Image (tube, rainbow, N blue to C red; front, side, top):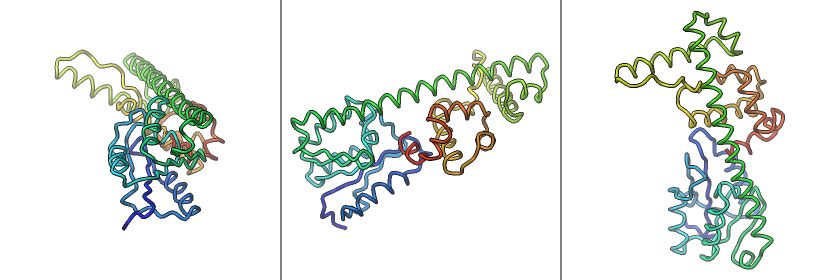
Length: 275
């Protein structure tokens, strides 16, 4: 299909678990409302790519089309889908403006084009503010993520220590305010890691982080999962904790970081789109 509008769509989803539907629906509504049709060949999507880096496959292909003169307009969900750091975002936008590209950010109700970008300090400040908020949000998530991992490691260490002193599984679950299955998983994973270390002649491993031993990536996927459980499926804290296989205090802490359970239920699609 020909692209008579010389327009493209760009979307970024930062983890494989995130659903692109929230972004797609908003963009499709905008296109319908403005009488635009963009062939699927001109929808550039980066899945599992971080917003902290501008070197992404979708961006690379889109820029090739831009600088070959094929694309004059790019429609995106929001500024933070384009970039998550203020410096990278402003540099990239300025580069695209010099190439004559109109950039439409649907969720931010912002339109940036060469006619209103050059010399327009107010617009640049608005874009910079959106990028600054996105960067701060990302830093907060990373900080909370690391704090959560460290807390989970400390909890696992205490479970292992008390188990070695003869504490029962049920007593540990009650004491640590978690489920018996969580305690068993922690002990089983630790046992496997110790056996592997001994086999390889390595130092004893640190306690598992409590999120399946996969570190920060699994933690971020679990955060998206919790948002769906509470927002999309309208589960309470206890039900969401059971479904996710984590303790209630973890669910409460994650929801609090996102603005509370009520906020998540009302805005879960927007939250998923921004993670």
